[in-house]
Length: 255
Image (tube, rainbow, N blue to C red; front, side, top):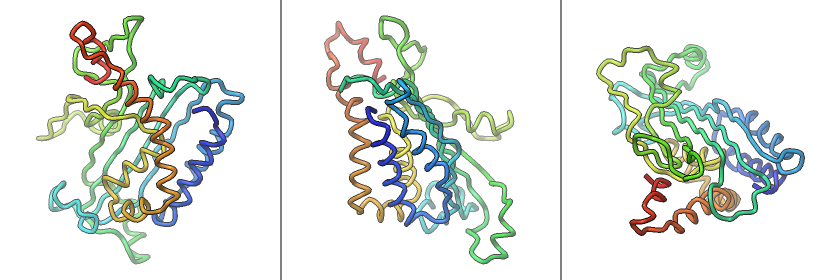
């Protein structure tokens, strides 16, 4: 990221498009991040931001086509997104690692009651506790030392999703019933900033809204810009891998 003002503008343009479709939604956290980003690259040689628990509205399981992914007793769901990212504003390299540190948590909550519609239903479910939850965790695993090797006993791609993560371990007791929770496997995935993370949530959980916003030219431009910032360097790095047996350690970036 070379210009914090441009990035802040990108976040605000993204919010303007999505906010017309995603209601009710509190966009204060995103506005705060945009304001913070205006200083990136000027007074701060490195940028960092933390989006903490952006709460997506409850929605109907049946309406959004998630019936095949949950117990039949669950009638509605909600999603919470957290993103913590760090990088270098002054990097001129067009290849290599687009970020220095990244943590993305997507927590899903299931409820045995339908989405509230009337004022009385909304009041009755205002303090509703989720009947079940799950979470996915995307983070970065930087190489250790001058060798560039990724120090791990298990497959640990540079950027990867894994089921569980802190949002499960910190909110669940030691007893999981019949649910076997393992950190492996870690699944390779390109890095995501706030914009791409919100797009990810919409694409995977709020399909009706996603199908509407992705047809908007402004939304398409912002997503394209975010992918160029974070996905282009990532895939360029992969394209430069030496696939010979003598350089097989470079594959640690992938696996």
